[in-house]
Length: 317
Image (tube, rainbow, N blue to C red; front, side, top):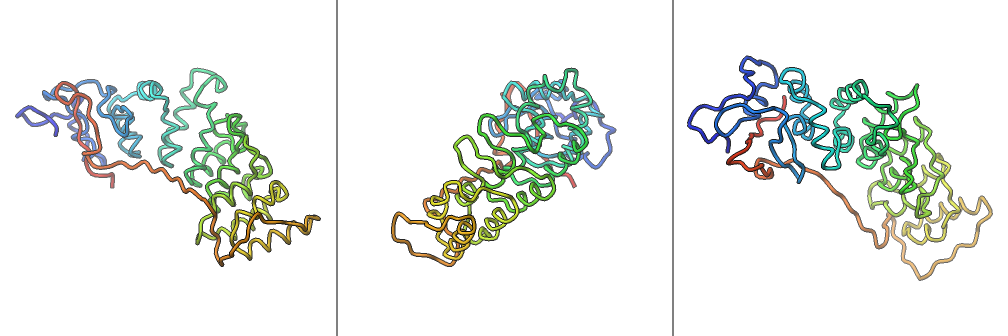
């Protein structure tokens, strides 16, 4: 894979003198099929169905140092990268928030906001609940960075920890409960003061979502007790359904006592049950999606005979 010419490969754009900690990553980054350089903003590869140019590829892979060098020393253009991604219903910020690249976020968010040539409220990507993507993927460090970044100003919907998505009715709290992420729930409750009492578009409460997502052996009992004791969740909403889903007798007794404390003492079950000592949710489907970046075999190149080819070298040290 690489240059078809018998000549030695030529580093695109003539940056032969570039000596840095990312030199190994860059020296074979972009080659043309005949050894002649082409524009650094052109697409070079398709990864997981997404067409990427060098800057977008560095961002996709979390190569902060490479990303910075491409932009600052090799003429790569963020606007061209975003234009390419936008045609695929993506954005640089969305990729960063999903993958949890804190170094890239620290660099890119400032650049993005600084170079905006439109009002914040007119930028479509900032109307999407991007922070909720980080919550769903468990990136507490990203959520903390964004919350702190906007703590003294009114953030756009994309970065508002309190934002409720009008399509789903969910805020960050409900999403954290849906993914049964105890550290995220604690951060959102204790640091951000996010509302755990709302219902989503399906009229599901935080407690319902948490119970449905609870996993055996992951401390779900402590998680649910924390929601009830610390997060002001509504334990009366669909309480019989909630109790019916749990097979941990101790947790059932805990919920029954909590309900009894507010005047609800009659709870019936639809069928005879056998209890276990650990939480097990019935009819539970665990759906997990993971985007992985494989070796060279996972990359589909764009017309390698006539277009650009590129090599994935070592990870940054």
